Amino acid sequence: MAVAPAQAISEAEALKKLAVVPVFVLTDSKGVPLPIAKDKSLVLPLYLERAKAEAELAILQKANPSLLAKLVAIPLNDMTAKVKQLQVQLKDKSRPLVAPVISSSADRQQATLMLKQQGISDKKIQEGLAVPVFFTKPFMSLAGTQPANKATAPALPKLVFFMSYASLQAAIAKVPPAKRARLEPQVADLSAVLRQIIQSPQDRYVIFPTADYFQLVEKQRQLNQQRPDPKAQPQRPSPSPTPTSQPPGPAPALQAK
Image (cartoon, rainbow, N blue to C red; front, side):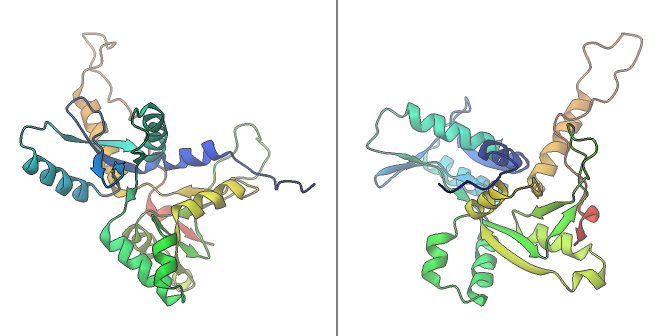
């Protein structure tokens, strides 16, 4: 009987790495997702790009002026769990709920171009590329953190995946020229990336936060600063609270291996 290869983390732990990838979901005024009836299914798009989601919201509101719809930003790992919950709760099983992750048109086009240059056919790209994820060969890395339960273990660098080509290029631009020349941009589907993360014998991979993630964290930080601390003493000013979700080190910390 074949022995399964050792895994550093579970599928659930791998999905948690998507917490820095917010998706924008169309909901009603109470925050309940609004799937769209299409053919024989209900489609709930999960937009990676805020601008694309806002454009779809405008179209929806124009077609249904009385509909009180809005956009809600939800971490992709949480939304993945929410979709599974909605699928179970769905009363009409004849119309399954599907929730495709919608990348930007620019990222889709760039990914297609890169794969074609590798000799991959249009048919295989169409069938195998749902959500493009970008990286470099060799990988760029972030400084590792010491495992909490393994104080003597070395802190291994984290190998980085990017959810947009623009983020990848911005990171490459900050690598010293001598090392930058060795970096070759690559692309794979998100499903393949997650398999790689799960099957790796060491927890070596991270997904770099999206631009929208940084914006949301900054917005939350500003809101927290404006909100008074109820526990503060009247005669003392409230300290500026820290956001609950802190992004990892900025792009300049990226290094070429």
